[in-house]
Image 1 (cartoon, each protein chain N blue to C red):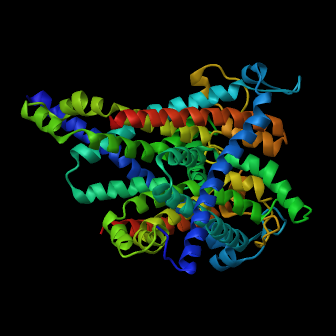
Image 2 (cartoon, each protein chain N blue to C red):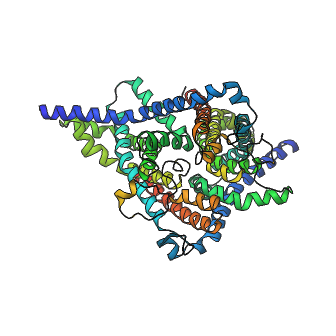
Image 3 (tube, each protein chain N blue to C red):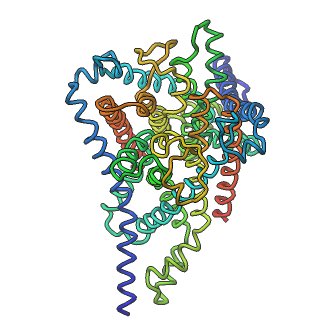
Length: 287
Length: 283
């Protein structure tokens, strides 16, 4: 009996440790980001770092202003949301309310597959198809630009928006819709005036998830955005917070490397804010 | 049914309905054309030689055999660590934990990990595993980074599977005098094996597609290393990382599309097997 109890206690402890791995990882990541990110910010000065408009990390007198990256990341994400959310939301409505079983059986797996495609593959297609197309249509010398990145990001956030929105729409109680139909509203009117408003917090969750994905995406964006530290313009080459890290880490040394860690910290703060917002939404839904 | 509606309401319905159909069609066309284009450009370059040789600067040929091996090694190493830990965490959350506050903290941590982008994992993985623990850019450092990344997937899917095991099974086992660990080992885990397999498949999908987290942690090595243990300590690029390498650093688009075609085949297989596991779970 005693042996059994000891085993029981050991297993309890082991499982507890397994559970703690996630907590320890989060703490370690946070600590490392802060420890490695803060020194360079201190040295450069937080104002010059966050609001400096020029990034010249390899120049003789280097300048470390990351405002172009911050703005590019924000504009890029907003652009992706503007394109991706309507398409995603409408696809979700279509799946939940309009499509019959057969059609939904085709569209739903398609959406799932989209989320499984590796980001480098999106980047490759963007480079080979999208960038030349933008170059031709807008008569540019170089097609790598913010617009290309926005389009790629919009496609990449589609699946999360569709899946989460569809779940939210399906969760709306049938009585709401029946009441609306009984009062003489058409099916489409019911969807847009009753179902969607009722599902709005769930839809918002999907959008926030998409924002998180867009702001954190590195590889696909790196392949189509051109990676020049310009202030963001629709048709010029730009660099995102994520891409400056992935691009320069391979050859950076010394202080430049510390500055990259600081950019990582800024990105991390952005993501944490989004996480908190997401949690608030999720809690709001539970209540 | 639409009889008696005003013109305005009719137009409203027609416009929105058209929009709904258009968006769904856009989504499907996007996927079909993406996959079609990748196979059209890539599949012709996937030759037996391409799959079974390594890159040779002398003969100016490109082969991805070492990278296929590196991908398999990375999947194996990550899963062999992440599966026990992830399943353990899920079991703790579902079967052992009694303190609600602690459960909330654990679940919050898992959710936070889901939201962290892979480039941050790459950065911290590089700082901790490659530098602090002196592993350098290696398969081991890359795999350990991925362990943390795929942990939430495994925890979540295992938890879902554990929840489907009827409560009466537990009562029955405990009623017959089984200890908790005995019950978990012989009843709960075997009953939820389908869900756990499904989670593992999803995790494989993430590993295969991952690139940003592996860029600095595992590097872009393409030299053939045959022994698994030797490979752990050498830099090795997985297929996704090599796609980026060949396209962005070498301008070899054909090689890029060939790797993309292989990745897409893997993604399709993974997707279908995950679905199969899920369907089995429901039954």
